[in-house]
Image (cartoon, rainbow, N blue to C red; front, side, top):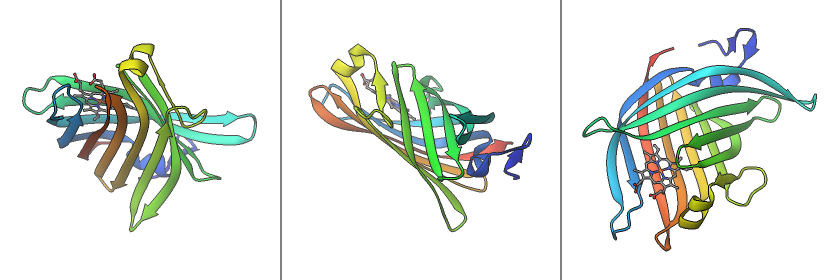
Length: 189
Ligand code: HEM
């Protein structure tokens, strides 16, 4: 796939463009009981271009936007919905990922783009309290189910995409690592 679309060079982000589906997702979510909830799920992610952005006449960013819908494997019910942008700066190799989920949590995570054996690797992190790669959440979530940190590893090779994300929560009076991982295949560009 060319990285130049409508005369904009999307660099490594171009490899994400398209519709991806998967049925191998695994969610490890908090539960008030002693055992966490493990749920298998299907994924659908659609990535589309969202154009270039110049900041303060010196930073040149390109970005793609996405919508990620997660359904329970057992009954098809939607149990997670996420929108966001992946953003890339060519001169510094910086990758950023902004996302929002309808629990009233949003964040901006950052990292550096990497390649290994033809695989494109997007690793990003955010921490609550940071003024840059940080996390914003509603007063309720901050008090009852706070997100303290977020780490995501996403990799793409050809038409296969893997992600593994760890959302560090403080909920029910203790720390909990909320982990989501999956493998998707591209079905359309
Ligand atoms: C594929 C991705 C994800 C899936 C499938 C997923 C699914 C879930 C599920 C099933 C719960 C438990 C809900 C309940 O107990 O009723 C949960 C809790 C939670 N998730 Fe996620 N989640 C995902 C990603 C994220 C991300 C990226 C964040 C934030 C950055 C996040 C933040 C939270 C928080 C704060 C809770 C605690 C709410 C609660 O249990 O009361 N999740 N998630």
